[in-house]
Image 1 (cartoon, rainbow over the protein chains, first blue to last red):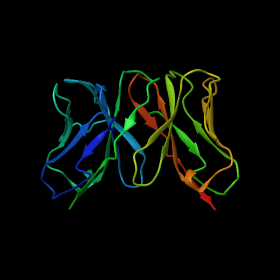
Image 2 (tube, each protein chain N blue to C red):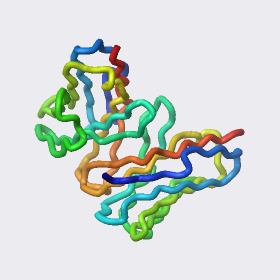
Image 3 (cartoon, rainbow over the protein chains, first blue to last red):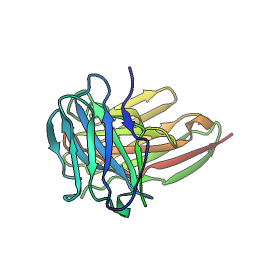
Length: 115
Length: 111
């Protein structure tokens, strides 16, 4: 059973470009979470999605960031017009159900560098 | 703003030593507490999910306890080995989805 997969693992973008980060959850998992780790900081929640629905986006910056989890295919975190401050590691996690008693399984992360 | 604090920030021990670290979190609106082990360049790996006051969980040489009334959890490692070297994260869940992480305790075990 493959774990959570993220690609690309490393992404370099110039300021003003768009970044698309993909996350394929574990098989059978329909709940996806995105977290961000800025340099020298801890993991911070960004957004929680179920298939075709955004459930909680309270941690996502209001501008330039969007996320989706379509019926088919991976979850996508999209950052438009990237700035240097977007440089971070972006992790996605998945779980089989909603609820605190379920583990969230993390992917290896995408390290975004904005030059 | 939820505050999840972990102490110490880092810890150096000798192989064979037993050690423990603390996670403190808000005692109200508790839903669950998660512990993760995170090795450099790898994904955070779930260790325990704890939901009930007084919970004690064990996996091999690692165990954890939970006190939701006073808002703390301890993680214990018995007989530390070099392969236990990692950052140990706790994460508080007060709604059924969002994890708020502490800053982690970085453990280094010297052979």
